[in-house]
Image: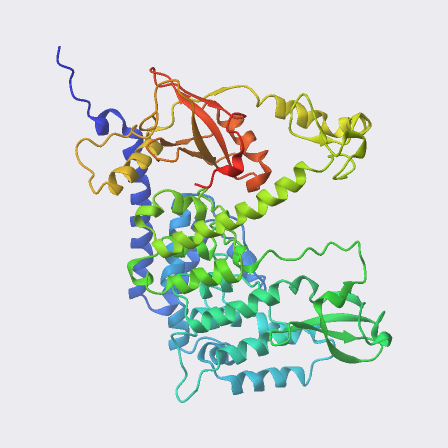
Length: 562
């Protein structure tokens, strides 16, 4: 009997429906944003406001916060995120505001690079303001007022519009203006209406030498911006009489990496190294900001997401930007956007086909470096008692004892194990449950198709023999029921786990609703060598196609470098 050839696209609609939904969403968002190009400014502002409301933005909150970030809630759906993405890409009505001079004189000067005008405007406000300037509402209004429908602060205007707009007869001095703004207290963590920071604008796919320099200054300023406007005391200074003095923190000087502190008793401003500034109230909730390049927008994205998969026009400039982000500032490669995708996942999957190879290489180098650092930390952790943190026990000849149940933590001896049991009990149960074998559920058709498409494109063809389930199988050269090593990547409850062997002939995604997902995810999270983001295990395939994973059978995991 001749078996009828299967038509995957008729009998398996899920994958094509998913692709169709994403394509339709992008096309609809693009067409709606394209409507803006032909409208006069007044009508354009009305339409942008309507679009912002449709994607879930509280525009009334934004109206009531003219000098702040406004509504920064996460944009919830794919369709809404596509609109926000296209709005950011086109710039909304930024250009129209400046062509029509519909912004403040100060904003125009910042975006046009007119240092003299910026200096004059600042001096005019400060001449009537009262110290400390970090408490001055007039100065805050000048430095932080959001302009255009995209709600850009003066610093954001420099990195967004500054590289394209020059005032007649002016010699642009953007770096000097940035220093002046930061020294006077401008916020380096300001966000636009879609949550974009200076890093998104200045260190993304359209970065220039100037915007990278401005972003670098803002990155350094952001590390201590949580102290701005706070009551502090000075400690550890060489000038003894300065220690113990109380003041209020002001702006940041990019040239010296110091913060201004207005000493209330002395009625003067001094510039102090950040390590000598301490909060007056130790109990005050004042956490440092994350690294500026790791701060996510309302789509969950960081600038590294953009340069991993650049457009054709961006490929020539992203290499230097990638070095800036990864080598100079150690930007995280594990930040997941709202779709559950991180830069490391992008270069591990389709990014190897469509991504910028130089950027992918830098991302993988960053992953290797992080792996070495954490393996070293893990080795040290394995030599430390979980209870008392001692690294050596003379009574046991220098050896630490392993918990016989979970085999995951170590102790100096029985006394430490008994003392630690109350804290370790629940963890021990979870770790022990992972010692058995895990049978996986078949991966989804959509994710299988993505993996096999990657393999087909590497081979240079995507023809009629394309199968959506090609990635879920034993590796080439491996027998049925024979164990082989797999790498499992993922750390989110709502995102798929990427599973593959060294040859990549076995490669598939395990989605959260599938059998075995929770067990594999818990094993990954318990792996300290890679911060709970990936782990190596062993697996085997039966003739029936069932895959079994053996979480504790991979041996010395630090030996694997692929």
